[in-house]
Image 1 (cartoon, rainbow, N blue to C red):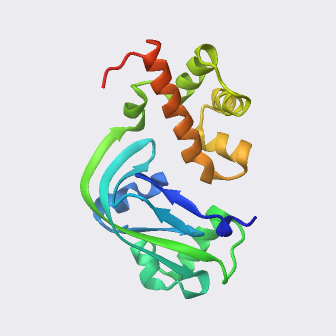
Image 2: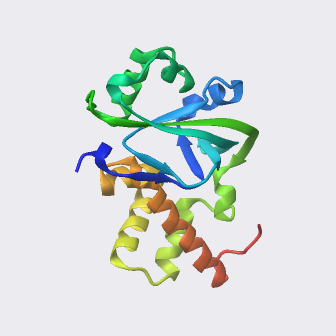
Length: 195
């Protein structure tokens, strides 16, 4: 099944590339454009980039367009110069795209700039260390064990998603597993509940 045919979702977190941090802080990037249909479940979101939570934002609109209908205004909302630069960026991220592919344009307003390390939400423990502790202390099914062992090897949620699923779109699934592990490890007293 093609990537743009799969309905994806965003709950409370949007992941951006490190290179967009300054554009967010300057107010130049006011949207993110994602290949495929994306459903947004929360109006208030946290924006992540470069291993940090860089902003809290409010979603203003979620629109769908065909790639052929993207214009310079869409590109500027996404912090880019023009439509051509936007198309290059989409191809760089997603590989092959066609004029008939659907994209989701998620517009937002930053309501608070933040500078919180992502590991704050992992009880000050890295995802790599959580994976090691979970493999050692928790009763896991085969898929969970495979995901966590891949995190141990790669030390990266991104790389794990690419290796196991061939796409970055499975990062929320991996993060949810890590969160579940944090809860269980905290219940068992392996990780101390400090926040």
